Amino acid sequence: MATKVLIVEDETNIAELLHLYLEKEGFETAVAPDGGKAVELFRSFRPDLVLLDIMLPVMDGWSVLKKIRENDKTPVIMLTAKGETDDKVNGLEMGADDYIVKPFEMKEVLARIHAVLRRFGAEENNGEKKLSFDKLTIDLDSYELRVDGKRVDTPPKELELLYHLASAPNRVFTRNQLLDEVWGFDYFGDSRTVDVHIKRLREKLEGVSDQWSLKTVWGVGYKFEVVNS
Ligand code: CA
Image 1 (tube, rainbow, N blue to C red):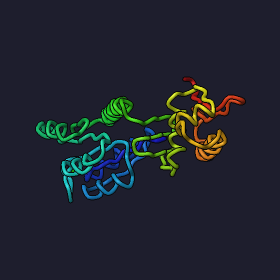
Image 2 (cartoon, rainbow, N blue to C red):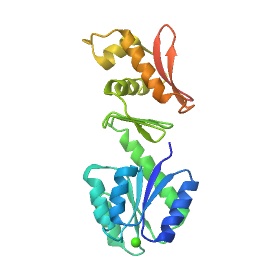
Image 3 (cartoon, rainbow, N blue to C red):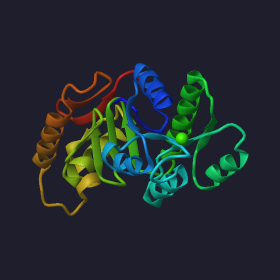
Image 4 (cartoon, rainbow, N blue to C red):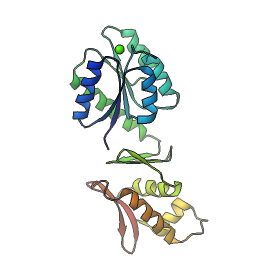
């Protein structure tokens, strides 16, 4: 899944440069030329990371950051002008994850993005119910399944089943184990329930990645198989 970066920058040259460079590096990008558009795009584009300029038309970077932080922890890197030390401190206190001083080298931007994403990923796995694999994110906090960057509507039990399997990659679960652990002991269904859910999950996940797959272990049950794990 391509990591999505929202570029918020009113200087067309810088925005274009970032856009071209990051796309070339395999990111998917969207550009917002003002603060209003930034908030709008943050909601519709759902970026994994935001590069946020401070001096912007309509709404400045601080207000955008505040809006984002109202209910989201998505990493934000502030783009500050040279010498604006107060801005850096201010930004970090307001919940920015890092800052880059203009003018910057593209390589530096890339390094910062990777560092912040790494840190964020490590924090995410700390107590949060979210699993990420190649082109797949299973989020049990927001009950959201993302396949190849797109949100896929999934009934809660299907998502819980997938999460359960994927939380222990390559471990084989029997149908009865899955019934007990995902549906609960007092569930009235039989093991066919598991098969039906697996079948529906497969329809959503088939052929998406060669890094993982939902495997049937004949005569035993199922596993979420991960390559090189
Ligand atoms: Ca600006």
